Image (cartoon, rainbow, N blue to C red; front, side, top):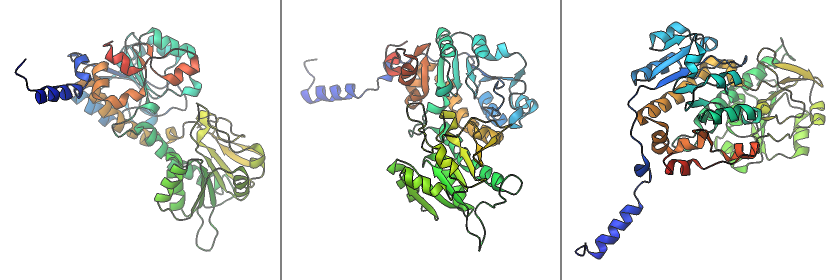
Amino acid sequence: MHNIKKEDFFQLTRESTMMPLELPFKKAKNAKIIKLGIPCEHLIDEKRVPFSPQGVKMLVNEGIEVIMESGAGKNAHFNDIEYAENGAKITTDKNEIFKSDIIVKVAFPSEEEIEMMGHDKVLFSTLNLPHLKQNDFVKLMEKKTTAFAFEMIKDASGILPLMHSMSEIAGKTVIFIAAEYLSAQKGEGLLLGGITGVPPTEVVILGAGTVGQYAARTAVALGADVKVFDNSLYKLRRLNSLQLLNVYNSIIQPQLLNRVLKTADVLIGALRPNNGRTPCVVTEDMVIGMKENSVIIDVSIDHGGCIETSEVTSLSQPVFTKHGVIHFCVPNISSGVAQTASLALSNILTPMMKDFNDSGNTANYLWENPHTRHGIYLYKGILTSRSLGFKFNMNSKAIDLLLASNM
């Protein structure tokens, strides 16, 4: 010890401070085969399935046992035979599904599904915070569940890949929905975008996030005159960087917004929520001033909506008319193109499950993929989400501290 040179000592000290903290707490990998359960969705309008048949094949090739409830992929036009041929075990026993090590579903589990879940299981699903029931949440905690929310999971680059994909789908889809309700069969008989010699239709978009950006791009491609409003200058600058022709943008000014809505053919609400609730920026009086048979599509409806006259509708009954304006307020727009949405989910979730399997257990997975910690809200029944803690007036603990304590 006395023979160590001073500069060597300082070098060792620097190296020790740079040593990753993960290693001292890393647990041994679990050698058992992970069972992954995929149930049918209980919500009528939820037609997506988290894995395509090809995604299941990739998981099975990684040594994961995939158990699917019969008919889970039916609404996305994937049949049981396709899944079985790619290695999935098909069952009609829901209890077997919910006793799997990992349960992956799109909608948040119902009360009955939570009752069927075993203890110390891992759940991947949407959280849908505005509609979350405290009783269901508490039951998950009692079962020592570790739970990840699709809408909060980040990738290594820091973006929300599942949310981005679904928002991209919604942004493109709303323009085709608008075109349908402007057409002769359901609306004024307008062609969205117009043609040579005919003035273009006017599309107003509230929100310059992913939904708004893709809606603007699609509308411009069809020849529409597009106006985008958002209070984020960063998002508006990003939209400007796309150099889209026929796109006007502005911060949200009520008087200006009211003026442009009077001539708008289509209004798309795509604002992100603040503190769990989307800000309502279009009043009922503004809607009254809109043209007869113009179309409103409120993509923000799953977080309360940004238009005062919006009311939740369903895929089976998607529209209602109020003050002469057609309202489309389906919360889950991407489910309307279920196969495309399911393929997008599978592209993201399949490598995620492979990483989970390679890690051997939840703690290892969170250490080796630190970006995924943003998506976790329960760890072995302990609340790790501050926003849920505020919502339910409960204490939460940082996931980093729980992992460091080797729980």
